[in-house]
Amino acid sequence: MDCIDIVQTAILFMHQNYKENITVADISAHVYFSPSYFSAIFRKLTGYTVKNYLLRYRLYMTARELRDTNKRMFTIAAENGFATQQAFAKSFTQMYEVAPALFRQTKPRINKFPPKNLLADMADRSKDASAKLRKIFENVRYVKKDAFFVVGIETDINYYSPDGTKSIEWLWARWFADKPMSFVPDQIHDGVQYGITHDESIYDTAKYMIALEVSTLDNIPPGYMGRRFEACEYAVFNCSLDDITSGRFWNYFHAVFLKEQGLTQPGAIKAGSRYSCYSNFEVYGCPSDMQIYAPIIRN
Image 1 (cartoon, rainbow, N blue to C red):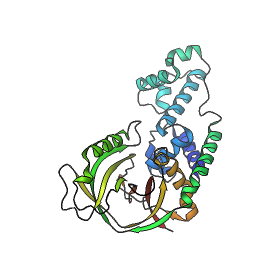
Image 2 (cartoon, rainbow, N blue to C red):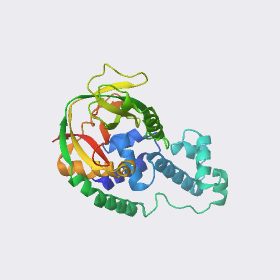
Image 3 (cartoon, helix red, strand yellow):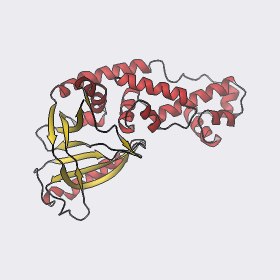
Image 4 (cartoon, one colour):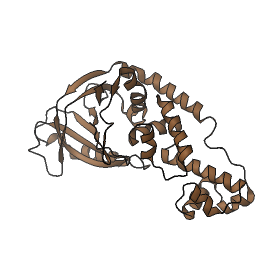
Protein backbone atom coordinates (compact mmCIF):
# COMPACT_ATOMS: atom_id res chain seq x y z
CA MET A 1 0.00 0.00 0.00
CA ASP A 2 1.18 3.55 -0.69
CA CYS A 3 0.61 6.52 1.61
CA ILE A 4 -2.85 7.33 0.32
CA ASP A 5 -3.99 3.70 0.50
CA ILE A 6 -2.79 3.48 4.10
CA VAL A 7 -4.68 6.60 5.14
CA GLN A 8 -7.83 5.66 3.22
CA THR A 9 -7.83 2.23 4.86
CA ALA A 10 -7.41 3.82 8.28
CA ILE A 11 -10.22 6.32 7.61
CA LEU A 12 -12.58 3.52 6.57
CA PHE A 13 -11.69 1.64 9.77
CA MET A 14 -12.48 4.73 11.85
CA HIS A 15 -15.79 5.29 10.05
CA GLN A 16 -16.80 1.68 10.69
CA ASN A 17 -15.70 1.61 14.34
CA TYR A 18 -16.04 5.18 15.63
CA LYS A 19 -18.77 4.11 18.08
CA GLU A 20 -16.28 1.84 19.84
CA ASN A 21 -13.47 2.86 22.18
CA ILE A 22 -10.77 2.67 19.48
CA THR A 23 -7.31 4.19 19.97
CA VAL A 24 -4.45 5.33 17.75
CA ALA A 25 -2.78 1.99 18.48
CA ASP A 26 -5.86 0.11 17.22
CA ILE A 27 -6.02 2.16 14.02
CA SER A 28 -2.30 1.92 13.26
CA ALA A 29 -2.33 -1.83 13.92
CA HIS A 30 -5.09 -2.17 11.32
CA VAL A 31 -2.70 -0.82 8.64
CA TYR A 32 0.37 -2.64 10.08
CA PHE A 33 2.29 0.50 11.09
CA SER A 34 3.69 1.60 14.42
CA PRO A 35 1.60 4.36 16.03
CA SER A 36 4.29 7.02 15.65
CA TYR A 37 4.96 6.44 11.94
CA PHE A 38 1.27 6.11 11.12
CA SER A 39 0.43 9.30 13.03
CA ALA A 40 3.08 11.24 11.08
CA ILE A 41 1.78 9.96 7.73
CA PHE A 42 -1.85 10.62 8.64
CA ARG A 43 -1.23 14.18 9.80
CA LYS A 44 0.91 15.03 6.80
CA LEU A 45 -1.66 13.86 4.24
CA THR A 46 -4.91 14.92 5.93
CA GLY A 47 -3.87 17.95 7.98
CA TYR A 48 -5.46 16.36 11.09
CA THR A 49 -4.02 14.34 13.93
CA VAL A 50 -5.60 10.89 14.18
CA LYS A 51 -7.24 11.80 17.49
CA ASN A 52 -8.63 15.07 16.12
CA TYR A 53 -9.99 13.42 12.96
CA LEU A 54 -11.77 10.74 14.98
CA LEU A 55 -13.24 13.34 17.34
CA ARG A 56 -14.46 15.51 14.44
CA TYR A 57 -16.09 12.53 12.75
CA ARG A 58 -17.84 11.48 15.97
CA LEU A 59 -19.11 15.03 16.51
CA TYR A 60 -20.36 15.27 12.93
CA MET A 61 -22.29 12.02 13.32
CA THR A 62 -23.79 13.18 16.64
CA ALA A 63 -24.80 16.49 15.03
CA ARG A 64 -26.69 14.60 12.32
CA GLU A 65 -28.51 12.55 14.95
CA LEU A 66 -29.38 15.64 17.00
CA ARG A 67 -30.82 17.24 13.88
CA ASP A 68 -32.58 14.23 12.36
CA THR A 69 -33.73 12.04 15.28
CA ASN A 70 -35.57 12.34 18.60
CA LYS A 71 -33.08 10.24 20.55
CA ARG A 72 -32.19 11.47 24.01
CA MET A 73 -28.96 13.40 24.16
CA PHE A 74 -27.13 11.07 26.55
CA THR A 75 -28.05 8.13 24.32
CA ILE A 76 -26.60 9.84 21.26
CA ALA A 77 -23.42 10.65 23.17
CA ALA A 78 -22.99 7.08 24.45
CA GLU A 79 -23.72 5.49 21.08
CA ASN A 80 -21.13 7.64 19.33
CA GLY A 81 -18.12 6.84 21.46
CA PHE A 82 -18.30 9.49 24.22
CA ALA A 83 -17.67 8.29 27.77
CA THR A 84 -19.94 10.90 29.37
CA GLN A 85 -22.58 13.41 28.30
CA GLN A 86 -20.44 16.16 29.84
CA ALA A 87 -17.44 15.27 27.68
CA PHE A 88 -19.68 15.18 24.63
CA ALA A 89 -21.29 18.55 25.38
CA LYS A 90 -17.93 20.24 25.93
CA SER A 91 -16.42 18.90 22.70
CA PHE A 92 -19.58 19.61 20.71
CA THR A 93 -19.77 23.23 21.90
CA GLN A 94 -16.10 23.80 21.07
CA MET A 95 -16.58 22.32 17.60
CA TYR A 96 -19.85 23.97 16.53
CA GLU A 97 -19.84 27.00 18.86
CA VAL A 98 -23.32 26.15 20.08
CA ALA A 99 -24.53 23.83 22.86
CA PRO A 100 -26.08 20.52 21.75
CA ALA A 101 -29.53 21.42 23.13
CA LEU A 102 -29.63 24.73 21.25
CA PHE A 103 -28.28 23.02 18.12
CA ARG A 104 -31.22 20.60 18.24
CA GLN A 105 -33.68 23.47 18.50
CA THR A 106 -32.23 25.67 15.75
CA LYS A 107 -30.98 22.91 13.39
CA PRO A 108 -28.23 25.03 11.78
CA ARG A 109 -26.51 23.92 8.60
CA ILE A 110 -23.22 22.13 9.18
CA ASN A 111 -20.36 21.26 6.87
CA LYS A 112 -19.92 17.61 6.00
CA PHE A 113 -17.00 15.80 7.56
CA PRO A 114 -14.67 14.69 6.15
CA PRO A 115 -14.75 17.45 3.50
CA LYS A 116 -15.17 16.35 -0.12
CA ASN A 117 -11.75 17.69 -1.17
CA LEU A 118 -9.83 15.75 1.51
CA LEU A 119 -8.80 12.90 -0.80
CA ALA A 120 -7.78 15.27 -3.59
CA ASP A 121 -5.67 17.29 -1.17
CA MET A 122 -4.08 14.07 0.08
CA ALA A 123 -3.12 13.11 -3.48
CA ASP A 124 -1.57 16.55 -4.11
CA ARG A 125 0.43 16.43 -0.89
CA SER A 126 1.69 12.94 -1.63
CA LYS A 127 2.70 13.88 -5.20
CA ASP A 128 4.60 16.98 -4.06
CA ALA A 129 6.43 15.09 -1.33
CA SER A 130 7.46 12.33 -3.73
CA ALA A 131 8.93 14.77 -6.25
CA LYS A 132 10.99 16.64 -3.63
CA LEU A 133 12.29 13.58 -1.85
CA ARG A 134 13.13 11.24 -4.71
CA LYS A 135 16.58 12.82 -5.13
CA ILE A 136 17.38 12.16 -1.47
CA PHE A 137 16.46 8.52 -1.83
CA GLU A 138 18.31 8.07 -5.11
CA ASN A 139 21.57 8.78 -3.24
CA VAL A 140 21.01 6.23 -0.47
CA ARG A 141 23.95 4.16 0.71
CA TYR A 142 23.97 1.07 2.92
CA VAL A 143 26.15 0.58 5.99
CA LYS A 144 26.56 -2.41 8.28
CA LYS A 145 27.24 -1.02 11.74
CA ASP A 146 28.49 -3.13 14.64
CA ALA A 147 26.90 -2.86 18.06
CA PHE A 148 27.83 0.49 19.58
CA PHE A 149 27.76 2.44 22.83
CA VAL A 150 26.50 5.99 23.36
CA VAL A 151 26.50 8.41 26.28
CA GLY A 152 24.04 11.27 26.50
CA ILE A 153 20.75 12.62 27.84
CA GLU A 154 17.22 11.44 27.16
CA THR A 155 13.56 12.48 27.30
CA ASP A 156 10.16 10.86 26.89
CA ILE A 157 8.04 11.86 23.88
CA ASN A 158 4.37 11.29 23.09
CA TYR A 159 3.22 11.54 19.48
CA TYR A 160 -0.41 11.46 20.64
CA SER A 161 -0.15 14.84 22.39
CA PRO A 162 0.03 18.16 20.48
CA ASP A 163 3.07 19.17 22.59
CA GLY A 164 4.36 15.64 23.02
CA THR A 165 7.67 16.26 21.23
CA LYS A 166 8.31 19.71 22.73
CA SER A 167 10.71 18.16 25.22
CA ILE A 168 13.13 17.43 22.34
CA GLU A 169 13.70 21.18 21.95
CA TRP A 170 14.39 21.51 25.68
CA LEU A 171 16.74 18.54 25.56
CA TRP A 172 18.79 20.13 22.76
CA ALA A 173 18.86 23.41 24.68
CA ARG A 174 20.35 21.61 27.69
CA TRP A 175 22.79 19.75 25.42
CA PHE A 176 24.15 22.95 23.91
CA ALA A 177 24.36 24.57 27.34
CA ASP A 178 26.24 21.59 28.84
CA LYS A 179 28.72 21.29 25.93
CA PRO A 180 29.25 17.57 26.60
CA MET A 181 31.71 17.17 23.72
CA SER A 182 34.19 18.95 25.97
CA PHE A 183 33.98 16.47 28.88
CA VAL A 184 32.49 13.10 27.84
CA PRO A 185 35.44 10.67 27.74
CA ASP A 186 36.17 7.88 25.24
CA GLN A 187 34.52 9.60 22.26
CA ILE A 188 34.96 7.82 18.91
CA HIS A 189 33.97 10.54 16.41
CA ASP A 190 35.02 14.13 17.15
CA GLY A 191 32.16 16.60 16.74
CA VAL A 192 29.58 14.00 15.68
CA GLN A 193 26.32 14.00 17.65
CA TYR A 194 23.42 11.53 17.46
CA GLY A 195 19.69 12.12 17.87
CA ILE A 196 18.23 8.65 18.59
CA THR A 197 14.55 7.71 18.69
CA HIS A 198 14.03 4.36 20.42
CA ASP A 199 11.80 2.28 22.69
CA GLU A 200 8.60 3.05 20.81
CA SER A 201 5.40 1.66 22.29
CA ILE A 202 1.90 0.80 21.13
CA TYR A 203 0.73 3.80 23.17
CA ASP A 204 2.38 6.18 20.69
CA THR A 205 5.23 7.03 23.06
CA ALA A 206 8.98 6.74 22.63
CA LYS A 207 12.28 8.00 23.99
CA TYR A 208 14.57 10.50 22.30
CA MET A 209 18.26 10.56 23.20
CA ILE A 210 21.00 13.03 22.25
CA ALA A 211 24.32 11.27 22.50
CA LEU A 212 27.95 10.81 21.56
CA GLU A 213 29.31 7.45 20.43
CA VAL A 214 31.92 6.12 22.86
CA SER A 215 34.19 3.09 23.08
CA THR A 216 33.08 2.05 26.59
CA LEU A 217 30.34 2.74 29.15
CA ASP A 218 32.77 2.60 32.05
CA ASN A 219 33.19 6.38 32.38
CA ILE A 220 29.72 7.94 32.21
CA PRO A 221 29.68 11.52 33.58
CA PRO A 222 27.24 12.39 36.40
CA GLY A 223 23.78 13.32 35.12
CA TYR A 224 24.30 11.39 31.88
CA MET A 225 23.36 7.88 30.83
CA GLY A 226 24.75 5.17 28.59
CA ARG A 227 23.07 2.79 26.16
CA ARG A 228 24.08 -0.02 23.85
CA PHE A 229 22.47 -0.48 20.43
CA GLU A 230 22.77 -3.77 18.58
CA ALA A 231 24.50 -4.45 15.27
CA CYS A 232 22.35 -3.79 12.22
CA GLU A 233 22.41 -2.80 8.57
CA TYR A 234 21.27 0.77 7.90
CA ALA A 235 20.08 2.75 4.93
CA VAL A 236 21.83 6.13 5.17
CA PHE A 237 20.41 9.35 3.70
CA ASN A 238 21.67 12.92 3.43
CA CYS A 239 18.78 15.28 4.12
CA SER A 240 17.70 18.44 5.94
CA LEU A 241 16.18 18.89 9.37
CA ASP A 242 13.02 20.29 7.74
CA ASP A 243 12.53 17.03 5.81
CA ILE A 244 12.44 15.19 9.13
CA THR A 245 10.39 17.57 11.27
CA SER A 246 7.77 18.02 8.53
CA GLY A 247 7.24 14.27 8.31
CA ARG A 248 8.00 14.19 4.56
CA PHE A 249 11.05 11.96 4.85
CA TRP A 250 9.42 9.21 6.90
CA ASN A 251 6.22 9.33 4.84
CA TYR A 252 8.20 8.61 1.68
CA PHE A 253 10.48 6.12 3.39
CA HIS A 254 7.62 3.89 4.56
CA ALA A 255 5.16 4.38 1.72
CA VAL A 256 7.54 4.21 -1.26
CA PHE A 257 11.20 3.47 -0.54
CA LEU A 258 10.90 0.24 1.45
CA LYS A 259 8.49 -1.23 -1.08
CA GLU A 260 10.56 -0.23 -4.11
CA GLN A 261 13.77 -1.63 -2.62
CA GLY A 262 12.25 -4.84 -1.26
CA LEU A 263 13.17 -3.93 2.32
CA THR A 264 11.48 -4.01 5.70
CA GLN A 265 12.40 -2.61 9.08
CA PRO A 266 13.02 -4.73 12.17
CA GLY A 267 10.32 -2.82 14.03
CA ALA A 268 7.34 -4.95 13.08
CA ILE A 269 7.66 -7.35 16.04
CA LYS A 270 5.83 -6.34 19.21
CA ALA A 271 6.82 -7.56 22.69
CA GLY A 272 4.12 -6.77 25.22
CA SER A 273 3.35 -3.07 25.00
CA ARG A 274 6.71 -2.16 23.46
CA TYR A 275 8.05 -2.50 19.95
CA SER A 276 11.20 -4.57 19.66
CA CYS A 277 12.88 -2.38 17.06
CA TYR A 278 16.31 -1.13 16.21
CA SER A 279 16.58 2.61 16.49
CA ASN A 280 16.46 5.25 13.79
CA PHE A 281 19.00 7.95 14.46
CA GLU A 282 20.06 11.34 13.17
CA VAL A 283 23.73 12.19 12.75
CA TYR A 284 24.84 15.82 13.10
CA GLY A 285 28.34 17.11 12.42
CA CYS A 286 28.76 15.06 9.22
CA PRO A 287 29.71 16.69 5.87
CA SER A 288 26.03 17.08 4.82
CA ASP A 289 23.34 19.00 6.71
CA MET A 290 22.47 15.82 8.56
CA GLN A 291 22.25 12.09 7.96
CA ILE A 292 19.51 9.63 8.80
CA TYR A 293 20.38 6.04 9.68
CA ALA A 294 17.32 3.82 9.21
CA PRO A 295 17.63 0.14 10.18
CA ILE A 296 16.64 -2.28 7.43
CA ILE A 297 16.17 -5.97 6.71
CA ARG A 298 16.62 -7.30 3.19
CA ASN A 299 13.72 -9.51 2.11
